[in-house]
Image (tube, rainbow, N blue to C red; front, side, top):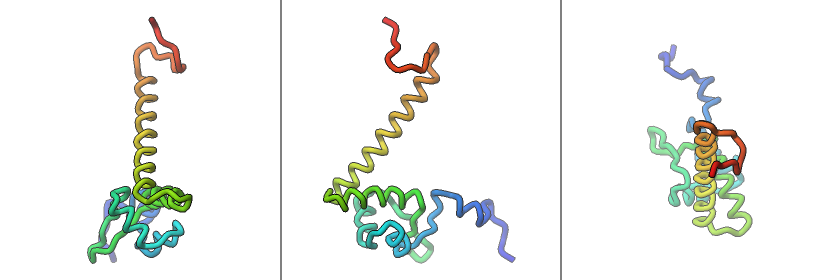
Length: 118
């Protein structure tokens, strides 16, 4: 009988960050090559985890990011530029989310855009 773990196997399947996919399977899932995954790793768009044997493992979250980069490359964007675009889009999305949270938590915030006191 396997030892108890803090996270059951079923929970790992639902975990977006669990490195469940081998390089070959990950490449197949996003319609790319293993070389593409290596290239976006070298560009530091994603950093796959390594198995005990040193093999790359990818999460579903990482595959969504890789697929976005692949779409840009498929449309003619150089891989380095595609990686930068995806990273900047994610930074912008996070900044917008944080601004919205700050707007909501500000004292006297009305929640409408453009409402300022002079």
